[in-house]
Amino acid sequence: QLQDELETSEKHLKELQQQLAAKESELEDFLEELESSKSHLVRCKGEMESCKLQLEEEQTELASCKSELAASRQKERMSSNEIMQLMGTVEDLQRRCHQGSVSESDAVQKMQEEAVRKLEVLRAELDELYGQQIVQMKQELNLQHAARVQQMTEQHQAEVERLKT
Image (cartoon, rainbow, N blue to C red; front, side, top):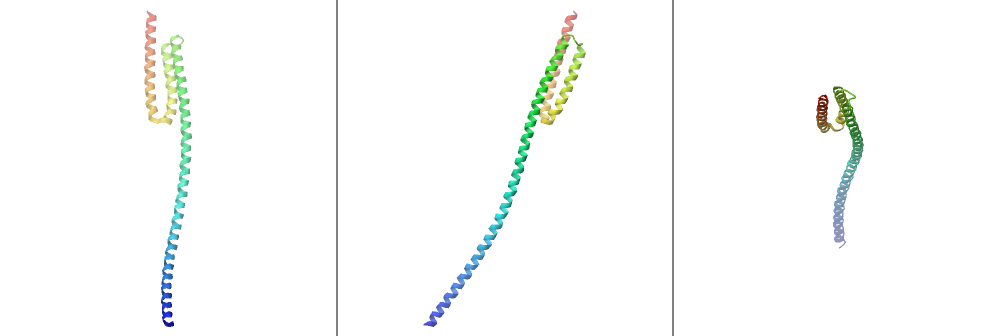
């Protein structure tokens, strides 16, 4: 009977050793999986840091673009004010021309030269700011201005002819 118990115990011992070996193998698998998860976590952490840096760079670039836009808008307002002053100068020259203080051709020529000079300066500034769209708008303004100058010249000539007769 002791012999049977010994055999049973040895059998049970072998089973336990097999179970232990299986559990050790399972534990090693879990440890490998844990190491793999750790390395994956480290990679993800690195990617997250990289994304954080990229986000900070893009936020900085956005802030820069916002300040550049604000500066452009300020310059646009200043240019608009200068255009208004130019229009006032043109009107003043036109009044002086009608008052006879300057001969007709001199007044028109000076007015055109001054307008062209100031418009060229403004054109260069606005081209920098808004490109082709502004160029088209300025061309329209130039055409309107030229038409207005032509109209004023014709009116003046008609008045001069009327006064001569």
